Length: 98
Image (cartoon, rainbow, N blue to C red):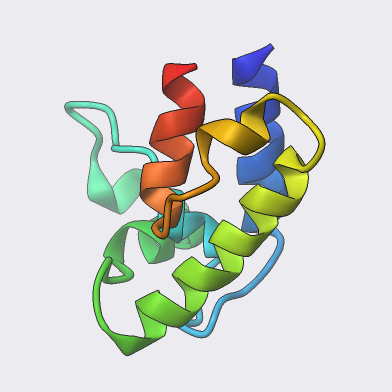
């Protein structure tokens, strides 16, 4: 169940361009698999993995993603798991742990 939900979130965030110019999925991006060849990656994937995870633009994108995650969890058990979390990456981690 979690994997399907998480993939749906990634796909949705891939469709929205953030303030950084990269798809919003960069904010909660997955690590590249070991041995991945950079030059063989699609441009979109390169954008996702080169967008910085700090700074003013990241903070704006991060707040947007966190808001979305909290909205997706409203009126579910998951709402309590991420209620007091202020960082979207931490929210995804909290949801994953449950």
